[in-house]
Image (tube, rainbow, N blue to C red; front, side, top):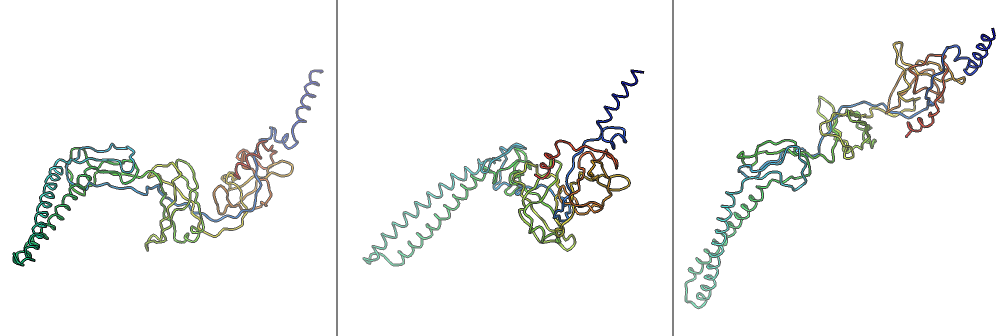
Length: 359
């Protein structure tokens, strides 16, 4: 008898620690995080597919013919001006010696004829030589001068071709493809290597022309990819589209994002005018077979399930329509376990969570 009495007293003491609503449920109240529903200015957004692209993705070609002696390794990173391929220059060096000799020969001939012109001018002034003889020598001198100019040009051409046997990177980038192999004979203009700039990357996407006026007013766009989410500035808008797609290209600056070239992305593009709507975080939505709803916390700390209809979305916020008012406390963490009328306890870290969401 005494034992049963003690058990009843202890039981009453324990039960007194829980709210009446909790006792009705038969288990402790779950902990949840809440946020206040607010009127926000949102604009409708369409998610458009895009790709990370390089501002320079080039096939570097040889400018002289010859046999490839060296070639940069696939995947190697090179700096602007660095040699990425070497072409055999043996024949060009032979031609260089020949052109150097031609230039010296032309200089010598021109020097002699210039002396002859001066000498015959003196003789003609003294009537010791015919005028036609002087004119002929002047003509020969002019031809020799032109020959020297041509020889000098040929020499400069060979010297330039010798420089071109060293193929240099026109920009800093990554060797993404070797189009020819070491030892192959290549002709002038043959692509030998693909160089991709991996800095100052961009995202390329095609948006509807109807979004043009909204894109002009935007500074940054939200980007989602398999490697994370970012917000990046618009670099350029090309308001030109073909008659079938009615899509224009938009470039987004990804210079501060470390993503690989070719990565698929999704970009949020504003597609309509901004409106004042009642908005909550997407995490507040409870998606069940009977429809979409949110849980509102009443003054007695019990949950009330309210059916809603979603509208436009922007980032983490989404418009809701239903029996919800601005200022209502809406559950954003722990709603999946709730039932209407169930008592809840708001977590102690709720203020920090809300602050983090706003940031």
